[in-house]
Length: 92
Image 1 (tube, rainbow, N blue to C red):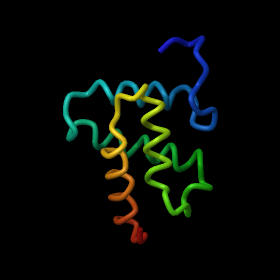
Image 2 (image 1 turned 135 degrees about the vertical axis):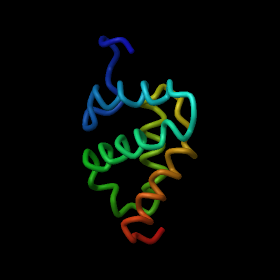
Image 3 (image 1 turned 90 degrees about the horizontal axis):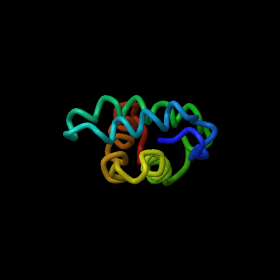
Image 4 (image 1 turned 45 degrees about the horizontal axis):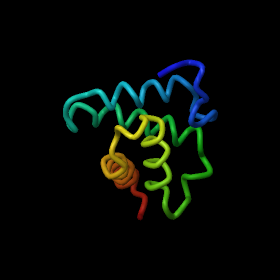
């Protein structure tokens, strides 16, 4: 990432974007999972208005997909969001 490029999302910030890009460089889905959970948590904190949205997983996955320059799968991120919500007892 070049620092003269604009950030994808100012609320999450440059560090979260760099984190997303470094997660995308990891080899396996299993290796990425714990880091994706952290990144999803960062996005949820930056966008609390999405917590009650009907398509929260799609919104978060779309943002993370853009932050990673299209390297992270939207489906993989949506699975992480769904798993976190199930652990919290939220219904989808």
